[in-house]
Length: 359
Length: 198
Image: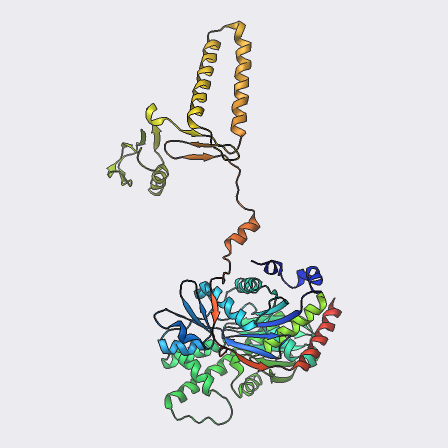
């Protein structure tokens, strides 16, 4: 391990050390959204945000020749094992009739893919890009504890801290939904309710003037919708995901002739609605039971995450929530400017602010 | 010869390495692993048993190996010779004391005390390794186990990507432009809020 890697630490405790180092090294702030389906990274020195699928595919050397993978992002192991990483893994999985591996499951690091942490490290390295010779600070997203299942986020949080440390990056973690507040609620001085409908979890935060008043998650979100639909129609969940991403929308015309696809979309509609109902009920219950502060001003609800991508999802949300009496005043319900990148963008804002403070 | 003796009746034993037998029994277990036998007996719920050695000097003779702190070995044969000499001296002294030679009694006691002190000093010296013929090893060396924090580090598997190579083209990632003006404004506002909190 290099000296650089040994010196990295959590952002807060490393203040003094970094003050000395700043004279020599250019600083990079990074926001890293660690999602079940996507990994997303925003850097202060780049104008674009990079996204990749958080999946990989292990191939045997008999399956494919290395020369055939020259244009495909892949990892070669010491013993000749091959891993196609990111979005390309989906395509190759279909070719070889293999199941893709997902390092994360229901919002947290998957117990089935513990051995794949090394591959995940390289995927993150590839996404973040080169930080050699730079003083890099990263805030990565973590989900809140789920209220409907007993899994702890501690292991997950520490694994990603180790991954960033191994890449020589100073790290800190922030709640995923709070990052949406940083990204989308500046005009409300970081007050509002943010819901991140991801693939594995729905994360919710209630924030008031930049302070997190309540955060929780539920283990129902995009994957739950796909699995329920697949079970109802006797299909494979991957196929449902594919149809959802291609055709799903809640408003406007959809020209589909295939009857089976229509049935899938119908089922998806029902389960999206069931997911929103479930999440809204949980927000009301948690707010009633746990929030002590008096929120006098009306606050916005910001919806984000990959599951909120289909057109009309926000309308459906407005429709569902209008049927409930809420314990707070809502100023507006809006979708994040970009539901896929809002978390990474908010994390970047947090990192830059933290770095400003410590230097 | 090492003997296992079980007096209780009616138990059926299938000790690995020995023929199956019923209790009460007295069986030679010299060729068996002692710890394995005690584990087997415990598993069978047999607690009332004896393991003893029938005196047979040629079999019972123990090799004693003493290592200095630096690890350099002292020759076993010379140790044995010195040990025998010491045994002989002690037995002579004891015989003299038993013979009630009052004139020498005080002197003998002093010599015995000196030997006792030397023996204690020898025991305190580290590391001391004594090996018996049955491979039971007693090490009085201080534990070199790491501190708890070091153990934590040992327990967590390291992330090792040095043997892995990342290759291929850039078709893997999607890029989306971000709004830099919004970002700067948000950073300023959040920084001010963080300052106010402090």
